[in-house]
Image (cartoon, rainbow, N blue to C red; front, top):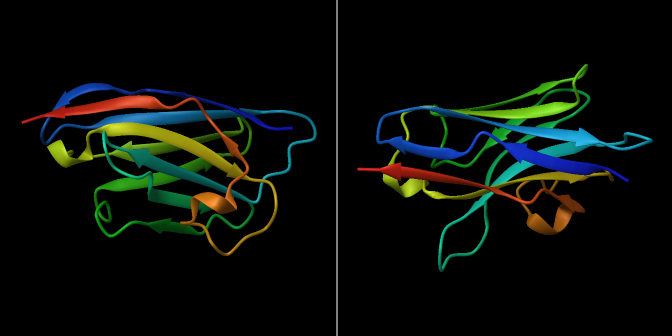
Length: 125
């Protein structure tokens, strides 16, 4: 079973940058898709970005395209989310998620079976 631990959240001013990391562990390590989601107070959890572990294809929500970049490190078994040009509306708890079965529904929370504990990102105006 895979376990996920996020890090890198914090407080940043609008226009600034943050880098989130998600460390995955477990034996055997079998992940098809890794995703980042976020949830703001009073709102539903929403898709941010996803990467297919093997092929490296990436996908983004329209709201973060050209500002966020998702990447993976095979050696360290980590997934990162580089967030640039942050806006106050990016404020949320960010969650890392893993799908241990192949799925095409990379933006659907129900496609993921393992979640991290979340890390807070706050962007001040």
